[in-house]
Image: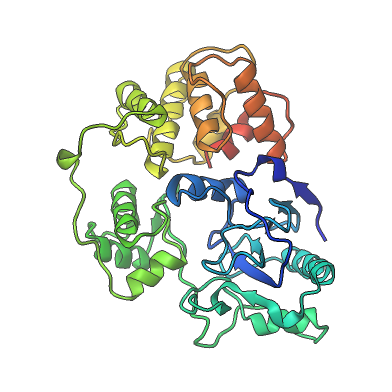
Length: 375
């Protein structure tokens, strides 16, 4: 079993509680990477939750993040949260042996602690009202057999109840390509060239907003499910039809990104994936200006961008420090006033971020810290 990473004091909400726990729910993240802090952005900024979704998140190396006390009511399965403990394995239907080992040991401990029978260890899609959900991407009969000591091999089921996984698509460097990209482009009205570029991402986000999905530009299981059911983007967003710019903290950041780096963001005071890409474009522009890095300013953190990162230390001032503050805020670590001054509040937020992600909490934004901040 991997080591526990206790992040309970960094999670939002958690005020509603129930000491009676009768179920354990298994989830998967539907992504190939990330951790609870990556998911937290969606919970807070997209879903507008006050409390996160999982009590525990099991990382690919077998370590696990303890996010909430067991008695906290989280948001893992709609209408089934009061008496359920939620455990998420990072992955998209494929999980490491280390993750499974941690899952088995953790669940056995929780079963004993709360007197929960194995029959009440369920996958997300085994709860009433969630049958069409692909999560947790694995045959739970196999999972329960192993918990009971019955010899079995963990593997995604090949039966029709557990449909074949489709590749997760997202804006990446180099751009993802293939027939599956063309399928998505057809559904959202993008040019069908098989290349998942910025325009395709923009239209995918519009489609996700239309369908009430997390508008992150990532084509995961739920977005694929909507596409496979024949849904298409009904109205292509028009920049000319944009309403009066919003006001607020993020609106100010978006306006600044537009004026400094020509990012073309909608000033809607909502820090979504396009805002994050705007921050990355700003960092790339500053690296080009300050170090002659000669990066393509595309908002994608690829190998060349990661190799070009420079240290930002305590006391620093300027645009790169401003971008560091914006990135910290986007990740849920409030640096206080976003003013381009790396003072006490920014240092505190940076060290909390580093500590939460297993980085050396030295208050220096170096290559590793930048890479995790902007991933």
